[in-house]
Length: 165
Image 1 (tube, rainbow, N blue to C red):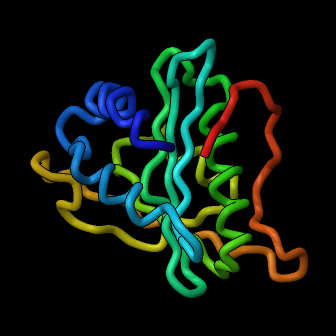
Image 2 (image 1 turned 180 degrees about the vertical axis):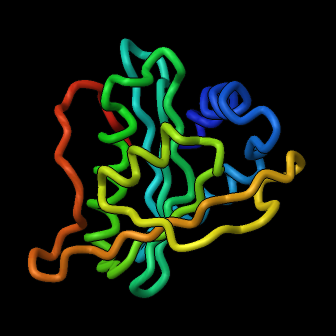
Image 3 (image 1 turned 60 degrees about the vertical axis):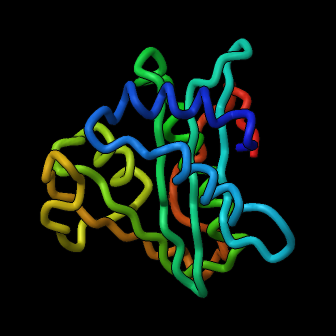
């Protein structure tokens, strides 16, 4: 993801998460931390026919990775794009030498929960009222990376949509 992607990302963000969308400033702040030597953040965009159709981000600190965001345009649901984005984030977690990857997911977002479970994420708790202003709880999930292979667990989905960092 680059600064020139922010307007398209914001449009998708507001469509998918109208109550708790990230602000322009939040994306700028994340991108500011994602550049430069020794960066421990990775942000991606996915484009199809020149149109931004998804984005994702990961931050890491020490051996812990945290999926910051994953979003896929509604017309791309069921195409495997979310799995491709998550695969790329887990590759970044491996490169950052993360032993665990965490995430929060709205408790009412069953589609996302199924995706994360397919990759080996397991529910470990809740954050009450995490998503504001709707006061929606978050399901906290964790993936322990595969110690013997040096890579994060998860399926390797088919390719197709162009994913750029």
